[in-house]
Length: 300
Picture 1 (cartoon, rainbow, N blue to C red):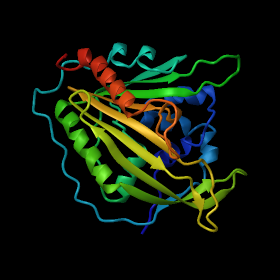
Picture 2: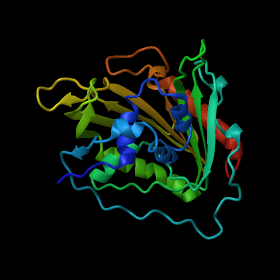
Picture 3: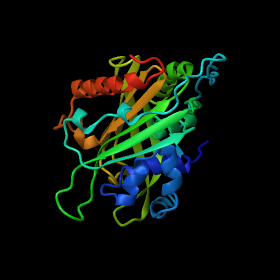
Picture 4: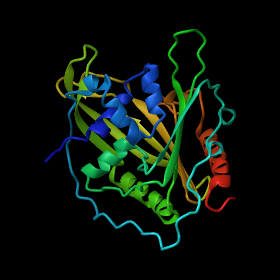
């Protein structure tokens, strides 16, 4: 059996193919991944994504979904808001940045990697990722040198305030997803250069590159996506193969998800390139943890 991915997951996958977004889309990227889906669904990306159906080739049976812990009465943190100082600053990055876009929210779902979560659902591992009490996000853009030049992201960051027990639980749910989705093959409909859909296959791999190197808990996730290939003839179609890196760090009741732009990270499909190596990424996570400390339920 196979079933289509949700619109949210198809949108997240196909956004990787958009290399030069319009300013309105960049501002949407500064919002929660779950919130921006509702916004972008009303703009032109809907036209691009229409008809892109994704089906899974296999559905191995996964373990039964456990029940998430419930915080004890009276354990809810007193603090709710997340100050701007809890976010990374341009000075924390080795790359120069320009405009800083941001947003705040209440009751937002914690999102780690919507495509990874989709793989988990297809393999009967529906991770229980918490709903936050409060959230704050930002996108740091590259500086532009001339009028009308489109700005590209350097880094995106989300910070969530969730119950402490659920914050600890979150990393176990990430492990469940990684165990289920070490390798995943998608049968998809990918837009070719002429904007015509082509039936393709695409390989995805996720792995934890490092653990517990910052804050109370942390993980460095590496996602490798091959270039889609036509199921008939094997011709490459769509975006080139890529590597995405995600940092997840918890300090007390605060969890941050940091996603550097792929071209700012040295890890490449075809070998190491310029940018931040693993040691630099771990150092960035440590700086993110220190930013969270004063705003956590128990400041550190």
